[in-house]
Amino acid sequence: MKLFRRVPKLPAALRPTLEPDERVLAWAHVGESGDAVLVATNRGLWLPDGRRLGWHEIHKAAWSGRELRITPAEVAQERNGYTVLVDAPVAGFLLLEPGELPDQVRTRVTRSVAYTSHHPLPPHGGVRVVGRRVPGTDGLTWSVRYDAKTAVDADPIIEATDQLVESAQEATAPPA
Image (tube, rainbow, N blue to C red; front, side, top):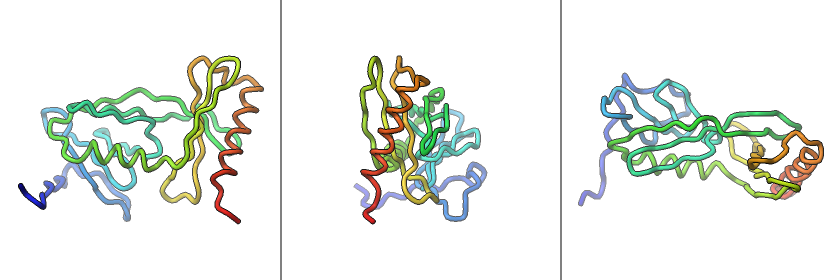
């Protein structure tokens, strides 16, 4: 058993353009061809198309043992003090030699969530209030995600959501 395993270095030709304080944590080839990679950094997940999703921009990440499925968040509305998010299309990546990538993704997405709570909203549906850590931002960034069949644009729902977010913000504010 090796006590210290050396992780293969990411080939320079496949390395995304990182910010000055950004560093690679894990990476893996996507598919069988080996000409595309997923790269996890301290700032987010670089996709094969060259986009980076910040950890706070990923709703869900699921690992099947061969495929990493990422559900990004998409902004549906900006409201006073928070955003309304919906699921963007799921992206699946076949990782034949995943290494530490799935664990890093799970850990980083989970670590970005500082506060989460679910609340029923009568007559049907509910809302999840989430406060997330975003690199370069003081405090938490707030968002909500409605359950299916929730009347998201109804005034009573918006008012209740505003109150729930405000309560969560007060509950997590540092002492004065």
